[in-house]
Image (tube, rainbow, N blue to C red; front, side):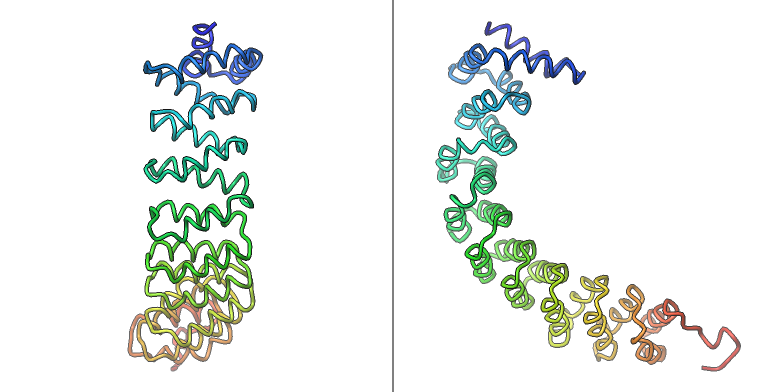
Amino acid sequence: MYESVVNVVRELILGAQDHGRRQEIVESINESPAEFKAFLDGIFDSEENHTEEKTLVLDLVDFLSPILGMEVVRRAISDSDRQTRIRGFQAAYRRQFDTLNRRVLEVLQDSTECFEVRKWAVHILGGTDPVEYAKYLRKIMRDPNEDVRVRKEAIYALTNASSNVTIGAFCALLGDTNVEIRQASAWALGKVGTDVSVDCLLAALEDTDEIVRDWAIRGLRDSDNTRALQGLAEAMKILDPAHQRQLIRLVVEKRSEVISRAIVELLGTSDVEVRKLAAWAMGVSPYPPATSELERLLDDDDAQIREYAKKALERLGWANPTDFGLMI
C-alpha cells in the first residue's frame, strides 16, 4: 500500500491536470486514512531522505480532509529539513489548524529557528486565536532583543484583531528607537483606524523618518475621521517646508474641504517649493475658492508656479484674457 500511495501522490502532482481527475485521486486518499498515515510515518519518521515525497504531500495538503491535512502538517512543522518546516507552517496558516497552536508556540519561542518559520508561526497564532496569544505577540513586538523582522510580523498579525491594549502598544512603539518598528506601527495604526490611533498618528507627523510620516499621513487621510483631517490641515500650517510638501503630495486627492482650504493658504507661503506644489495641487483637485490666490500667482517670479497656477485656473473654467486679445 505504501508504494501505491506514493504513486497516487506522484500522479496527482506531476501528471494530473484535469480538476475532475484530481478530485477523484484526493477522494481515494481520503477514503484510506490508515494507509495514508502509514505512508506519512514512512517518509517523516525515516532516517532516509524522502524530500521529494514530502514535497509532493505538502503540495497536496490543501485538498485533503481536515484530519489527514492536519496529520501532514503536524509532521511537517517538526521536520528536520528547514524547507519542509517552512512549507508545513505555510500549510498550517492556510488551513488554520488551531489544534497545533501549542506546538506552533514552542517553535516561535525558539530564537534559533529560521525567520521564515517563525514568521508563519506568528501569523498562525494571530490568525487562529488572537485573544489567547495577543499578550505573547505584544511581548515579541516590544522586545528590543528580538529579531526586528519577527517584531514587525507580530505588529502586522495583531492589526487583524486589535484591542485597546494592542492599539496602546502600537502607539508606544512610535517611540521605539528602531525606525522599522516605528514604520510598522504607523502603518498598523492607520489600518486599525480608531479615535485613539488618530491622536498617535498626529504625533507621528513630527517623526524624523519620512516613511513613518508617510504612513501617518496616509492613515489619517484615509480614516474619514473629521478630527484626523482637521489635524492634517493644522499640521500643514505649522510644519517645516519639507514636511509641508510631503503632506500636500499625499493628501491632495482626498478632495476634502478642510484639506483644500489648508493648501490654499500655502499658495501664499514664502517657500518657493511649497508654493509650487500647492499650485500644482490646485490643478489636481480644483477648488473654486482658490481662484483669487491662483490669479495672484500668475505674476509669481517662478515660471513653473505661474504655469501651474494657469493650469489650475483653466481647470476651474477661467479664461485667459489674452486669448481674446485683451490686456490682463
